[in-house]
Image 1 (spheres, helix red, strand yellow):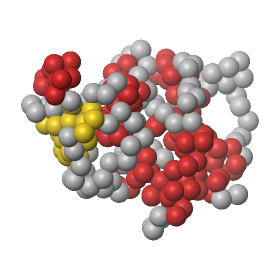
Image 2: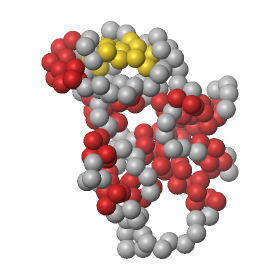
Image 3: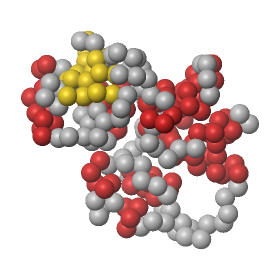
Length: 204
């Protein structure tokens, strides 16, 4: 599968917001967007006014980069959201939040979505007692997400960590096990995303 291999901090500067792609670095003084708040490239300063299409495109690119997806995969979530009941934009964000790698990140097991994806890929996570190594796996209501028994020693440092966990999830740093208490709705998603712009872009 294709993946972005460039500098993560360059993506934050391009979108003009913190995408939290580097974990703790994003909240430190080393954050690139704090030190260099202009878009990358020699023409980053003084770019002309952005068109309506440009605003829609930037919103889509920003959301893709929040979740670390490429275009084909991201567009697949849009079409899946169109077919589901409810508001398309909110459905799409709910599907993205329910990715296993994102849930692992939200529970605080991974300090960034990229690290969480690697943890899943390496087979350290179980869902309802069965190992799942597919980052895009969609979790469901009542699913139990845990660190595999043979991997718990590698994550012993989490017992000293107290992450801020969204209300639709629960995670115990003592047992290294969590549960999906509810499916995420729009007000549970704290990212600065205007999903209607993405829907307008794909509806063209």
